Amino acid sequence: MNCEVFNLKELDVEQFEIQDVLQCILHTIMFHRASGLIYPKNVDLELFEITYMQCNDVVIERKIDEKITQFIDKVKKHPNQKHQICVSFYESKNKQTLWFTKKVEHRYWEHWYVNLNVAHHPKPDSGKSRNSKVVNPEESAPDKREARHSGLELSLREVLFQIINFVKEKKDHIPSIENLEGASFPFEITISSLSDSAFGMELLKRMLPHGNQPCSADLQFLKGSDSV
Image (cartoon, rainbow, N blue to C red; front, side, top):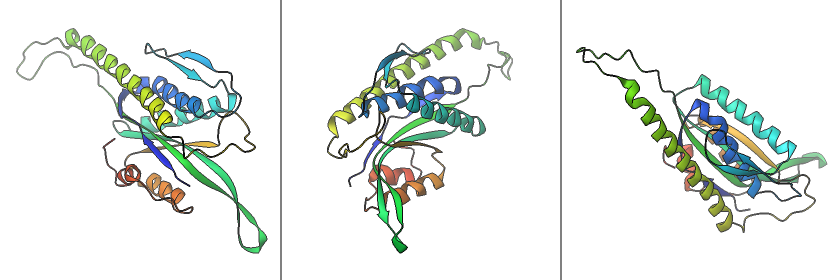
């Protein structure tokens, strides 16, 4: 089975923006991979002038909320790092093992990598440099933060268009729908920092058992590359 890998544009965010950014991206991915009966709803972000679609499914919302909470907890423990969250879709297949027992195997057919560079900006200093030159950082700080925020909103829109374009371009790898329960294909969400080699090895283990070869995006991640 062919496994597609979508590596989304890296976003520079602050901790207080993570909730909005991940809610928007993860729900957009799930909405465009919905395969069952859904009752979609529009959701307005609190921090950005962006509206996105949700499947309005309790199971999906619970999983996403749980993973975002775990993601934020990890960021607090490891600040000022690049972090990654991955949405993976799979099929469950019964695999015959020894002694006539069966084992359920996950055959992954799609990975979505969401890349965040989380920065922690310290508060401005007292306003004096070493040579006692008087400066007022408060004058430029609001303008810089507003410019950064506007830039992030633009980048977030670009990521949403990335998702839409990927969905339109890549369809042949999607498995047929057979006895599907719920609003979505089976999926899981995993979290890592880009320095977490264990996460990369787990990805490799997922792909090799059923004959999938890691593509260039996977190999870049396994090597700890910062490129998107």
